[in-house]
Image (cartoon, protein in one colour):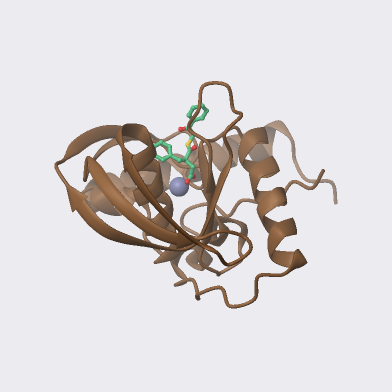
Amino acid sequence: MTLLNILEFPDPRLRTRAKPVEKFDAALKQLSVDMLETMYAAPGIGLAASQVDRHIQMLVLDVSEEKDSPMTLVNPRILERSGSQTCQEGCLSVPGIFADVDRADRIRVAAQDLKGEPIELEADGLLAVCIQHEMDHLIGKLFVDYLSPLKRDMVRKKLEKQRRHADVASPASA
Ligand code: K1U
Ligand code: ZN
C-alpha cells in the first residue's frame, strides 16, 4: 500500500493548474490506486491529483457510507449546472478547518475513465459538492478562497499554530 503525501495550505504548489491527461497507461492506473488508498486512509471522500503534487487532471472520490464505491474521473468538465446548495466543506489540504460554501446543487459532468473511454454522469447533493470541490483543486483553487480575506488569514494563522504545536509534541530528530 502506498500512501502519498498530501500538500497543505498555503503551499504554493496547490495553486498549480493541472494539465490534461494524454497517456492512459499503467502509471496513471497506479496513481489512481495510490490516491484512493491515500483518500481512504486520511480519511476523506475525495482527492485531486494536485493535492499529492501531481499536476494532471485526475480526481478520485467515494461519497458512499460503506466506502465501497470508488470513482476516478480523468479530464473532468462540467457541462451543465443548476440550483444551489450550501454545504459545510472540509479539505485534506486544510486540516481541521470547516466552512460553508455555496455551490451548484446539480451538475452534469463529462470525463474519461482510466482507459480513456468517455463517461458522462449527473450528480446532486454531496456527490455534486465533492466533484466541484475536487475540480477546483485542478485549477489551483481551494475552498478557503470562497471565504473573506480576513477569514482566510485566520485559517492560515490557525494552521501555523496547529503545526507549531505538532512540532513541539513530536520534534523531528536531528
Ligand atoms: O479534497 C479534499 O481534500 C477531500 C475533502 C472533500 C470534501 C469534503 C467535504 C465537502 C466537499 C469536499 C474531504 O474528504 S475532507 C474530509 C471529509 O469531509 C470526511 C472525512 C471522513 C468522512 C466523511 C467526510
Ligand atoms: Zn480539498
